[in-house]
Image 1: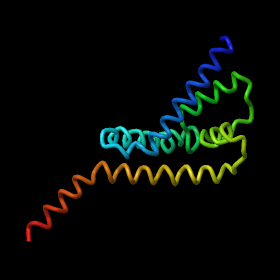
Image 2 (image 1 turned 90 degrees about the vertical axis):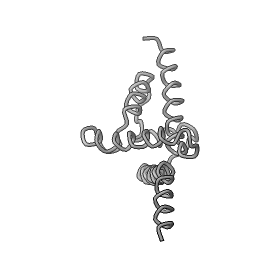
Image 3 (image 1 turned 135 degrees about the vertical axis):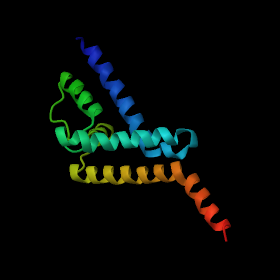
Image 4 (image 1 turned 45 degrees about the vertical axis):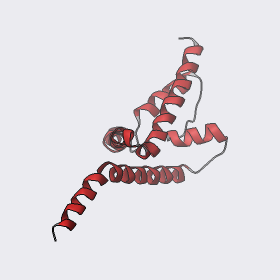
Length: 135
């Protein structure tokens, strides 16, 4: 295939993957997107853990596909994670991969907790209010 195709695929994956990451981080902010956010966070966690059992912990199919495109474009020595790749691509700076993995996991867990809270707080508040009015 022509190199223009691989360049277009690279741009496509950068935009798609970055938008999905940003949605994972902040999709819980808007009421209309909260259920989709929780679903995507759970899918991400399943990919990292369940698919990770077969392909290595933290496995993401989008990263795998994007890195295959980058290899077609001649990129070598790609980092172990997409977040690290994106950081290096945007800033040109190096960061310790273990640090990036820890930050990624912490941000993911915070987003997951917030998403669960905001998706189910109405039910919790309703139940709590119902229990208070009994007495």
